[in-house]
Image 1 (cartoon, rainbow, N blue to C red):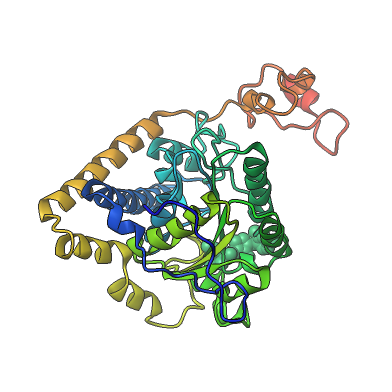
Image 2: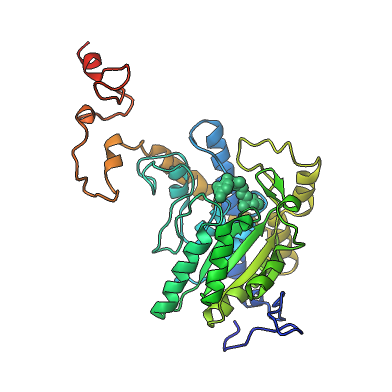
Length: 385
Ligand SMILES: Cc1ncc(C[n+]2csc(CCOP(=O)(O)OP(=O)(O)O)c2C)c(N)n1
Ligand SMILES: [Mg+2]
């Protein structure tokens, strides 16, 4: 890996160069085990999501289901560029990033199935959970809001003199929010050790990128913030690793924020319920046929890095086993106990006793939760009848 301080490249006008591309490709330093590991994480992401789809159709996944089909290289390659002590802030399509950072398939399955022993104990129904020990921050839904949060996180690294870098993902849609602008601007001014990754997957719900911005490229926005920017093929996991790693190295050297734009494509609708009727005919199929990140990478592993068919198929087999075992474990977990909702909150242990009509209740549906005198239903008369 490149070491030592380097000053950011300057454009002819003296401003920061838009593409801080250099000849170094950090991925050339990866060992053959690490290259196979990248494939493992991408395959795990895809197989785990396919399992979630099966569970969704069996109504065992009780909330929405958001896929990252076709975006696995973007999530995995970028997270792989971080060190263990670094922190990333994922979005719904960054399951792969969370797995790389140490989230387990059992946790993910329990979370989506709202099990009582899931990371949020059934309070949330997809991957909005975090673990600062493992270096991934719990995401929130408002688009762009994690950019100022991560500006704050990385400012604290800087103020404490910690050798840590932060990475925040934002979709093409999220770039249109005030929070995105305020967060990246503040982090740029403070020279926070932050990498902002814009995942350009062509759509924000049903809005195509052409209706999202008048800019030709999201990476061009870096100029306005006075930071380096670099764009890469988001479906080439090694290119993603390279571009992110260069930005991470800049941040670690004290050179502040970089903007990375990853070009990818959302092959599913916004969530499982979305039938993509707004997508032009043949577009999804073309990406699947010509630009699938797993197909591309496995071909490259064979042709360029001499990986054998056996090595690749044994990873596929291992992933299938891991996901099968995790599903069995997660399916055995029970639902959350209603009174558990009073634990692990700001007032913990709870300052108040449960309301009288909830005392002794084990199931939230066993009785209507309406106190006497509310509306039309009287729980006391119901209980005595
Ligand atoms: C501020 C805000 N506006 C609208 C929404 C509703 N919403 C949730 S996801 C989404 C689309 C996000 O698109 P993009 O940022 O491109 O991410 P992608 O889903 O493509 O990964 C919208 C509009 C929201 N969560 N927050
Ligand atoms: Mg998008």
